[in-house]
Image (cartoon, rainbow, N blue to C red):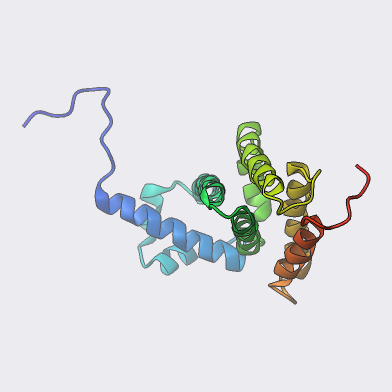
Length: 195
C-alpha cells in the first residue's frame, strides 16, 4: 500500500471530529461555570475523555478558546441567516436578539477571553451587515418605527451584554425583560425621537 503523496493532508478521522465536538461542548460548559481559568483536567472530566486525548487535539486552553470563538461566529452567522429567512420579520428579529442574549448569558464568565477573538473587522462587518438587513426588513414590514437603523439594534445588543454582566448572578433572565422593553420602544407606533 503506497503512502499518501507528500504535500497532501489527511482528513481527520470521524472519531477525532466527534471528540473535537465533545471537547468543545465540554469546554463551553466548564468555561461558563468557572471562567477561562478552568483547568484542562476539568474539561477532560466533563468530556469523559482523558487529558491526553484533549492535548492531542488542542495544544492548550488558548486553542480551545480559538475554536469556541470560531464556532460562535458560525453560530452567529447561522442565527442571523435563520432570522433573515423567517417570513415574519418581527419573529426573525426577536429570534436573533434572543440568540445574542442567550449566548452572552452563557459566556459571561469568559467573555473577555473571547472578545478579542471575535471582533476582527471582517467578522464585525459581516455581522453588522446582517443586523442592518434584519432591521431594514422589520422597518419595511412596519414592525419597527420608521427611522430605526441597524445601529439602534446594535446598541441594543451592546446593552444586553452590559445587562447580563450586571445581573447574571442575581437575576439571570433580566436581559430578556430589558430586550423586550427596548424592542417595544423601537416598534412601529412608538414616538420617533430626534436623530
